[in-house]
Image 1 (cartoon, rainbow, N blue to C red):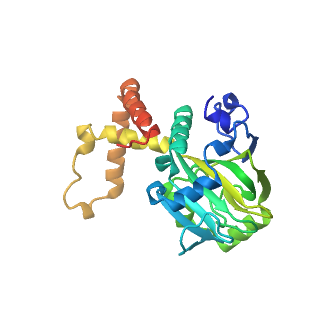
Image 2 (cartoon, rainbow, N blue to C red):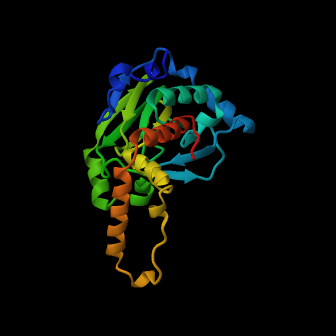
Image 3 (cartoon, one colour):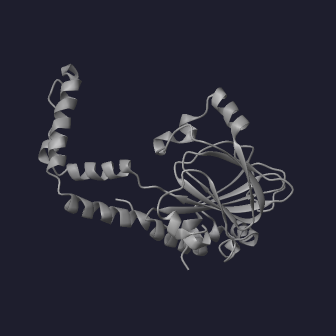
Amino acid sequence: MSALEWLVDDPRVFLTGWPDRPTVYQRGVPPLAALFTQDDARRIIADPALRSIEVGMVHQGATAAIAPDADHATYTLVLNGLHLTWPPLTAFARQLASELGHPVTANVYRTPAESRGYGPHWDTHHVLLAQVEGAKVWRLHPPIVTDPLDRHRWTRVGFTDEQLARVERDAMTVGLEAGQVLFIPRGWIHYGHTETAASLHMTFGVQLLTRHWILQQLADQAAEHPALRAALPPNLSAQRVEDIVADTATTLLSWLGALDPVRAGAQIHTSQQLAVVGVTR
């Protein structure tokens, strides 16, 4: 059984194109708890050798300087980077990455009843959010920044007061129960809270390779073109920058015009395959 079948209703449809809106999938068989449970969270907290890459406690959007606790009555436990340290999620994330062709990370969050961990925020990656235990109510709002890159992280861009008021006023509500999966496209603003039941959910972050990533790969290949390695002239501060930009653009376009897409594509394919298994170069 494919990893994607654990998360979405019809993998063949999903693979034809990313959904452009939040989508709920009615999963649950096989049980998502086979990957992680509340007992696993307790085990990780108790054994430092099993710790995830990042362990923390948050409440109402703020980090709390308290010891990690998988059963705290108020604060949310955050276990980030479990795709690197927890064998079931390591194997699952790698399989999912292979099927999607993009790197995948895995985090786990445990929120007690009548509580909220993070406030409104957006991610620079797609999220497949799998509800394992309990229930959680999510508020979702269309992007302020379309298709954000790392430079557009919400912690850098932030909200204006007017934007935040609009998000909190106009966000749609989605209730998620154990066995359901919520797909959140990158850039969509989201925040969740629990009601009468505690919640344990996993997030699989699809770390998207984009056209901008392709341009970065091509820029690396362009470093082999002597004309693009040429130094800029002396007395640079006195030069007309627009002339230098125009000359560089002309040289770049000439290089791109002569580019062999098969040869260039082979190198990029290798980089993509390495990225899927977590190797960057």
